[in-house]
Length: 145
Image 1 (tube, rainbow, N blue to C red):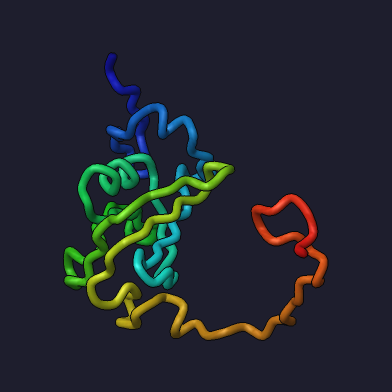
Image 2 (cartoon, helix red, strand yellow):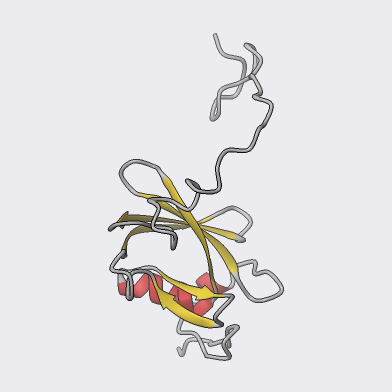
């Protein structure tokens, strides 16, 4: 059985497994958000965008590949900077519109040279919520004891 291939934003045809492609819920540009996280610390490093081909390259190449919306081309993280992302796992969320890519990050993840893309943006003031004492803990079926 041959793989069904579909063109991505660049007009290229993807080698992504059709069963995986069918689970994706893409934006109008054909892209899915990819949240990149350091595999051993849980640190959120960056957000990038993938089309079917970028996801295929990420799943089969061991390094993270994105679709650059500004340059309209594929870029494998670290090829020019040396700050590579080595894939440890890739998960799809329940709606199929976001990926969680766990990596071993070498050097800075952000193009500014910062460890993460969330360092220079800074914290936004937000009211901190508190869970009620009788609220169920995630994964449980009732109030906590």
